[in-house]
Image 1: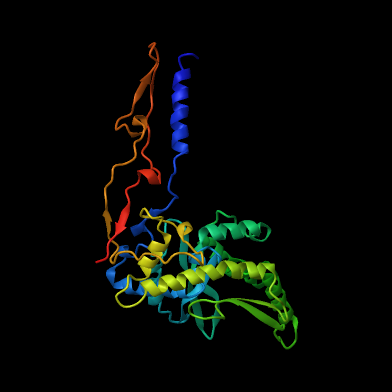
Image 2: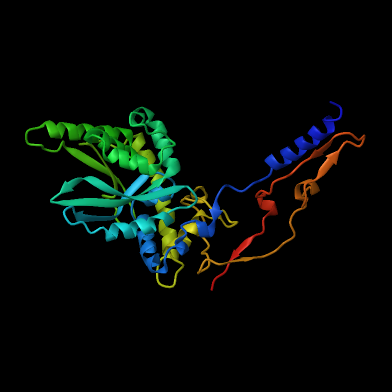
Length: 354
């Protein structure tokens, strides 16, 4: 025991210094956040237009802040079932995989089960995976009957609920689209009551809406009983949405337009932690935030070297150090794996204007 004591003491000191380091938040390199460069260049304008349409619509609240676990309606198509032309579907399926930033998002195409006038409809959707997990966890009793858990893949969730019985399909849609529980209960009940009536009249209702750039109403919207006044659930959603939209409007004016950096740079800069790592959690959405600094165009970085802060030689050693008791005896080999260090040891990044 006396032989091992000094070694465990040293290991404890090293582990404490590593665990106590001021490490960056998880993220991916900028070129892995909405990696449009990986597409065939001919698809680049299309995916950038799609991203902008998403942010101008209610999908903003999915991509930034995770207020809506799932959003759709930013792209749709339809095709005749007797002679389907699926080229548009295939094209969209080729570009949707770049709607990602690490594993934070999942995008896909949902082909609806119902057929109307001989045609089947399809639309694109995007999910915030952390927000989707929270929603499934919050409504575990409902989703678990379909074998859906917080670890279920978003594609499985969307596809499975599309083919559920009508009442459950509507309830799932309400939860996935981020509507308050009372609105989901009302909508499902109103649809059931309407289907039972002989004239199939709609149950009287009002609507509450969260504005977007594309429209002040009718985008992020939910039905409520006639005469309903916004309650705490309604106000909480609106309060979270307001700073997101305010910040997006400001950034949009700086990034979107002739001669400006564009929507990909907007998202990467918004998600950048200041050290070239991107994650949605880094997005600032405070109404009083300072105006953002625009990134380079194209997305090129220049590194300005500076001497790193001094570190323990045990941490920085290029080869695995070997420690032994001065009194001889057993030797202990310690291999320290490389890892990302804290901001004090990080080389700052400057974005260059062309």
